[in-house]
Image (tube, rainbow, N blue to C red):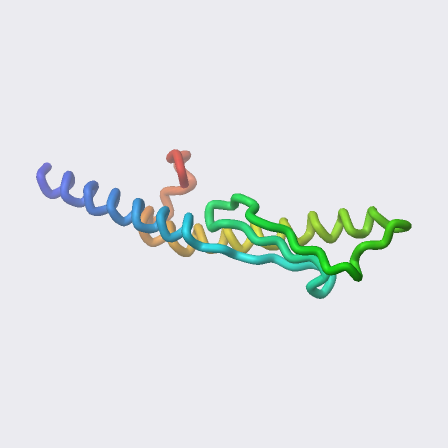
Length: 102
């Protein structure tokens, strides 16, 4: 029983470390060959959007909207992959068990 408690405590420390690393990480996603860049935290929180003036066409706002969505999606995917990379070894694939925060 003592050994299990030590293992659980160690796992909790590893999870806290991985979560801190994710919170500090910033990932970018781009669309339109770099015309739109989105930056997200490792937690998935959107931090910034950069739009190249060449992407701004008052006659075609829809394309710009699509580029923003694509850049944010690209950045969010990078954050998801980083989360799997950081948390996977710690949780041993337990993410599918519905544990909070995984």
